Length: 229
Picture 1 (cartoon, rainbow, N blue to C red):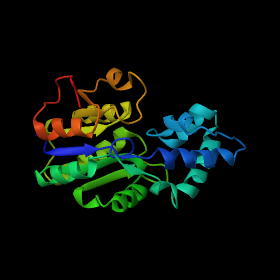
Picture 2 (cartoon, rainbow, N blue to C red):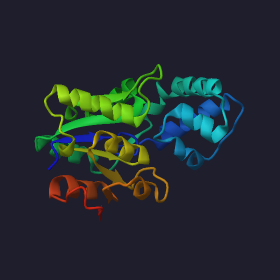
Picture 3 (cartoon, one colour):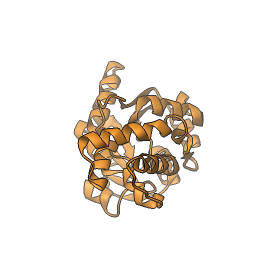
Picture 4 (cartoon, rainbow, N blue to C red):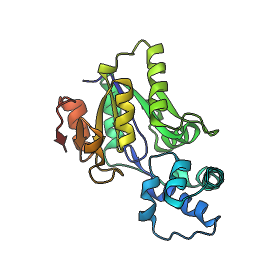
């Protein structure tokens, strides 16, 4: 049993596709770009937004920042609530907290939005630490986010990485865990590309929330390189 469990948010705890992709559409439209297919915008779920605008639409750094600001224009009011918890996630968080584990959020999404989303779903009470990025562009990479979580855990006297596990759906989450020497469980029900989690070196990959429950509360050990769920 891990004593500290770090969760990514998007694609791990909740499915944000409608909100994130809809806001990307809104931002692109302000540049005269129409993208009617939400599926084409799924790669925006997870990585820093500005980097995605530059990578997928060849925006300059200045254009990308303008697009992020336009994105937030809609996301801050509507998009953050166009989101749904994965089935069984609320019950899992309740049971993990009841087991005595320290739970944390480590998200690349701005902290202010993370807090709103957790409250909206009624799950804020389960998390001892909530860390995201900053609206001014600081701490956008997962390694930085996870390092801040580790710092806050250390202040609580819970700084042993071997007792920590990071749970996420993208390679960035696996890399963030490795950066602090923590374990990592990847979830394949999120937005990883085919082979992404395996190539990143995830210790365990689970297919659904019940698989995650089995690993976290049923005794399957990280480090075995297995799949569950």
